[in-house]
Length: 76
Image 1 (spheres, rainbow, N blue to C red):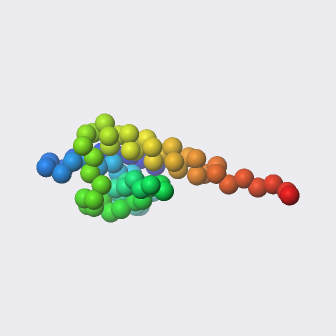
Image 2 (image 1 turned 90 degrees about the vertical axis):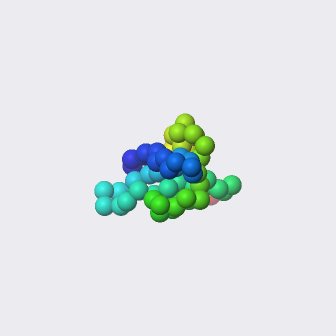
Image 3 (image 1 turned 120 degrees about the vertical axis):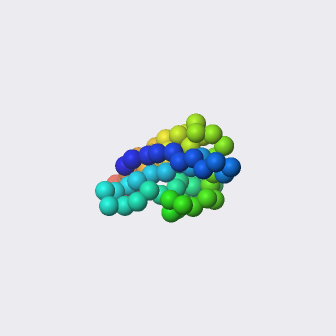
């Protein structure tokens, strides 16, 4: 997984992720219940600073890592 920030003047900064070799960049949107991934050119989730965009990338990365280990199974 790769992360980057994208800046569009007059709009803001965007946190983006590339999740596969043949997949394009996707914009990371934050919701009350988690995250959503949107097309690279989506302009709905701008952030004010590059630091905010970097923080969003880090939060998404941590979220994905937690989800990988989220399910636990045991006998009842």
